Length: 477
Image 1 (cartoon, helix red, strand yellow):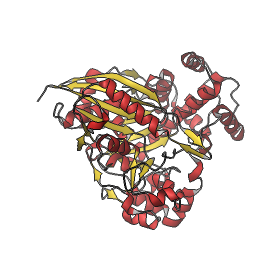
Image 2: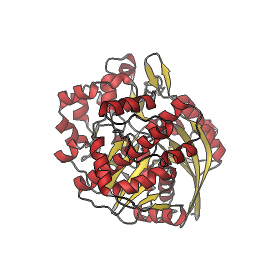
Image 3: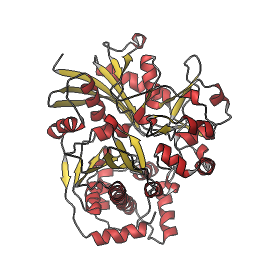
């Protein structure tokens, strides 16, 4: 067996996709970008869709640019799906989780099935766009009635690459249709919700060899597709360069996924009321976390403002007074696309907070509020799980945001280790390398490789925790 393996990670995020080339050997991982492309949703009539064919085009372009590889792994965001007919053809563009079709559905389903039963079975945070609610919202539509199979987004890309149908379990666990303790589809829950159980394909674990790439795709080489942690957060957590188990992670991008890694789920009533989620991770771990709205607020603000020098704006925001205005990033008003600065101003007015008067003041409000939300989630994760932590690892695009990383350290009262930025792609690549037998063992062994090869920045906490407690009280939520 070769001492070095070359693999490709297909990593699809909510605002962009990328194909990353990884060369991995003993104590060595090199990452280069083969191709990056935008992921922009498309509204047709009243429905917001993912442009899945553009994403597929970007994937194929990237894999051609990557050249011959041993294997390919695919990860993406969670909950959204494509429907196939009996011939295997896609029935329309997948609907975006930010679409309004699920408005009010979660409350109706919770009344029907019971919030306690839902949590005891699936362990999931109540989010209005979970796959369960999307399917209930789609009930009675011709498309759903015609469907033969449902594939989550990474499973759909894997199917187009290989012709093999299946469901990788880290992403399946985000649907609210997966029985966490049985590690199987929650068929009784599906049936009681009026969802056809025959839509769902067999489950497989990360590390499973799916099959060779279809030769008619014309990709270089003879790669096979390997299942990785296909939920991007599952791969990102593999890519956390932690020492030991006493760490919290923040996978920070459009969303901030804030939590700890556990051996078993936390299904207590206190956990349910705190809206924490238990998702399956690699090697039987549990990602115990809370979804925080994340840099979506900043991204949408930048889109509203147009051409803006973000580094300059962040420097200006760093000079703004701390805690002048704070909002709860998890307020549902911030979920849909739109004029985010106006929504932040309205939220401040409703809460009696000073209204930010400039873009820099709005950005400082966003970053302060996000740091406070990180603080709240890190503290709650420790209290609810009984797992105390010594450091917070920030991975993903947010690791580049020095102001956010420093304020998160200040807010949590813990050191923040920022990086790697491409943790998701690295986690994807290391899982493929482990499957190929090039790197060894368990998650700590994979993380050792990251610590030895990746650029990390440490932020020490500063300031007065009393000030952060007072600001958190103002934020509410």
